[in-house]
Length: 187
Image (cartoon, helix red, strand yellow):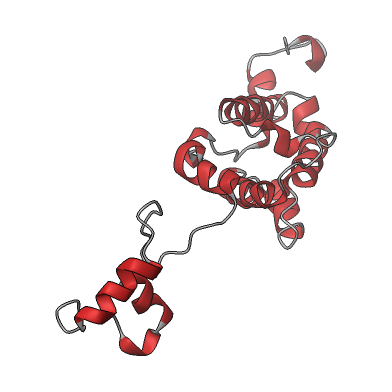
């Protein structure tokens, strides 16, 4: 009777006690298949086995991706992000040489990774890139542009925000440092 309630939305559900015995026998003999799983009619299931399997078994956790807020943490964040992608079998989503085998599964995983990127990459440059590519949600391009932008930033090349702030501070003058500033910094 579950099938009848799904096909006929005007009936608002079928009460087995109110149905005629002939209706139930007809349903049992002609429509019912005991081998099929009964799915609630308000619940949409994907016909794609890859998406169903991914949703049931392997859907990754967004908590595995630590937030990226400051430019001086970019190198560590990049390493942690790639480790989390590899641990959750999603590293191919940021690989430009990967060929798509299952388009529906790929699209669902890209939506998930786009949301993770939006939540975890909080640095202003990364947010601009994610916002720019938000309509297509192509995570490979987002990751490549973010890596290029952050790898080439002045803070990454100088090894963070703290060193330029320390160099321009008053510590050298207060300590009567009479040599060039470059000799004071050790990497």
